[in-house]
Image (cartoon, rainbow, N blue to C red; front, side):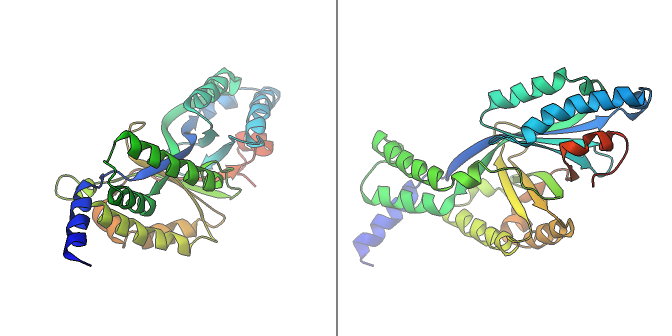
Amino acid sequence: MTASRTIRHKAAAGKIPAVPLTIEGYSVLHQMMRFRWSAWRQLSAAQRTEIASEAGRLLGQWEQAKSGQSAVYSLIGHKGDLMMVHFRSSFDELNRAEMQLAQLRLNDYLEPTTSYLSMIELGLYESSLKTYHELIEQGIEPHSEEWKRAVKEILDRQREAMRPRLFPEVPNARYISFYPMDRRRGEEKNWYTLPMEERARQMNEHGLVGRRYAGEVKQIITGSIGFDDWEWGVDLFADDPLVFKKLIYEMRFDQVSAVYAQFGHFYIGVRCLTKDLVALLNGEAPQ
């Protein structure tokens, strides 16, 4: 590389935006709820069946929707009894789903424990670096109108190519593991102070671990910066819950997790199809 080209590259590196490009898909809401079993048991068997069947009809429509599905999980442990996961095209649609659930008689027996709001997100570290370098090499000023047009073209192409990952069906797996996370550890270990090239390297290393489990677990990452208390939400879906432990444990050893990751509460649930909702609310575990 010539001296003049080296100088240009150093100058370009200094101008590269720190923020990677992202593309977004479905808006996502997790609702964790406790069930008021004592009040529920005071109802007659006929009343319980009627109320559960009413809820099942609405949830069944969402479960079978062509796009923007919902799923119900029976939570394991003290953090709640039910978790509902909703994929929708917008926050307005998520809010509409909340309002529809609130009108069900079943809602009288549900007590929210927490919730999580986010959007399916794909981070484009590799594409971002390539795009930024190419635009700077062409003499295009970062954040100029010409720059914005070029970036938009890239994002539009990526969004179309990644559409199945941005707008997926709820995976048909028996178990779910959901947890929120950050990539920061105070001022001494701050992920956001690293150069983009280093963040891209670490994320590539991180992704290699996940890809080794591709046949055993389905992973959906959602971005929540500006929407909720953590920066990302992670949903893992598998038929064997042991895979969650092995995958997350192995990922803890790569640099981005070992040095920078913080994790919130984990929620583990068993999928309950709406046809089995009446049985679940009668105290039977999902089949």
